[in-house]
Amino acid sequence: MKQLKVDAINNGTVIDHIPSGKALAVADILNLSGSNEVMIGINLNSKKVGKKDLIKIENRELSQEEVNSIALIAPSVTLTIIKDFEVIRKAKAEIPESIEGLILCPNPKCITNSEKIKTKFKVTDEKPLQVRCHYCEKKYKIDEVKIRI
Amino acid sequence: MKNLISMRDLSKEEILYFMEIAEKIEKGDLNPNMDKKLAALLFFEPSTRTHFSFATAMKKIGGQTITMRGTSSSSVKKGETFADTLQTIAQYAEIIIMRSPTEGAARYASEVVDVPVVNAGDGANQHPTQALLDLYSIIKTQGTLENLTIGVAGDLKFGRTVHSLVQAMSDFNPKFKFISPSFLKMPAYIKDDLNEKNIEFEELSEIDEKINELDILYVTRIQKERFADPEDYEKVKGSYILEKSMLKDVKKNFKVMHPLPRVGEISTDVDNTEFAYYFPQAKNGVYMRQAIIAILLGGVK
Image 1 (tube, rainbow over the protein chains, first blue to last red):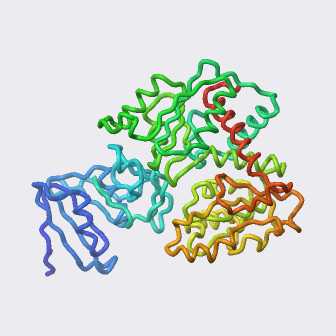
Image 2: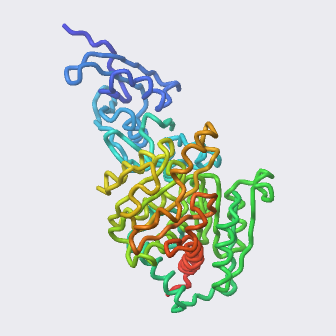
């Protein structure tokens, strides 16, 4: 019999189908260093995608904003919200049209880096994912920017 | 329209509306009266010409101006936030005209204050009033903005003015010839935009290479400081200097434009030809800025 490598959780969120190697970046975005129990699986075998990463977070339901922030680096993820061992909701991360407060503008001359302003970015292209700063109007590939909640 | 921040915000129709109002003001068919209106000119970066042009425009439509220069004279140094500085000035003036080295500063200002904001240049980002006056100069000399062949020469990598111009002309089916040293070429993101819009362009390295095909040649300054080795500058600078002898077979409607100041990239013997248009272009800037201020202040019905 096949054994589950990671225990099922009682209440919380399972983030599945994270591209292999991106789990730690996702954990970083979600700021998982708090007091919740977190299990991170890296390079797990997957029938669908070959190798994948997976994160289980006990006792935390992710907000839509948080889900969207994951989509920026791992658009393929699926989320399962669990309550009393039952799946109560499944969600897919969707790339939003505009992103507020999540991305730091890499342009040192951008006003968002000298004043306390919530950053705003518009998604201009999906493949590869590119965003444009609402203020300085510079366009960046998603791996050129820093993502923060 | 409340603010003028970026050419990206303007539709083709809005661009043409600015042209129409500037023309009516120039011809005297429209005389906006901005009596008792005060424009605050916030210049956090030195720019004598742009400041002078805006001040002239405001005065010619009967308004007045106050000027704040640099960050040293302001309370910014005392630790006041930029937002507070702006909100205070918005209590005094009916319109804020702002130049800043910080990119996005004018956009942010427009979100903080209730009065209209005009972007008079924000770092390497946008300079929409320059783009509009350039378009006005083109339409005046060519009778149209559509289907023109435009040469753009000089520092195409760092030149905010040429980026705005190329962007602004993109709605009007132009053909571009980009003329620059190899390391000052038009940036990839601008060329990507042009490819996406199926706009034809080619890159050249001599200013007179295809000059006879052009309707407009827009010349900009190449700053010596951009060159790592001053000798390289001396070697290439001749390729980007326009001389009268190059104009023998140009089209009849051909015009040379330049945002000024020039530092030798257009030989002075060009000045007395029918093709020189850079000084009238500066004058057009005043008409265009009169139009912009009047429109934003609701003075054009």
